[in-house]
Length: 151
Image 1 (cartoon, rainbow, N blue to C red):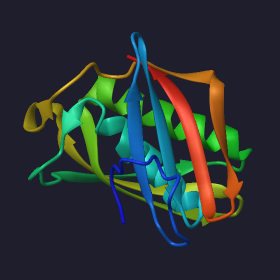
Image 2 (image 1 turned 90 degrees about the vertical axis):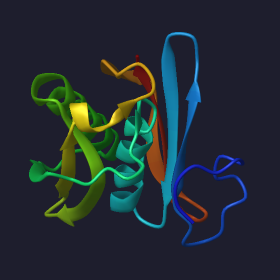
Image 3 (image 1 turned 90 degrees about the horizontal axis):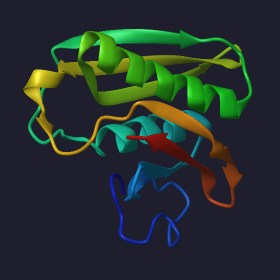
């Protein structure tokens, strides 16, 4: 199971993965879940992107790699989402597929991207990651995270 689910991951089973976004007046809360930390981080990226873009039928035109050094899980989540926002704002790159793998405590991330002009923009593009509601960690079914992004 992937993508958005109506129960926010509450009725999930071991091995399920997905994400959802909860729009609020000035920001968006993104929740993601997966069997492992790396997949949870990838789901968080896709959840953030789907807050402002319809990726249906969009094919990637480039592949970028990011190496995030060893850090706390919270730092990895915030840094990864900040990097996606940076690439979006500066280079107009929108991730349409994400893979993340553990590497010496850090993270190797592959972003298959398309140009912002190639996606249907459906909402406000995120501008920053907020630390006040950020969390990531193991749960009874794998890993889950939540983060607020300013739009």
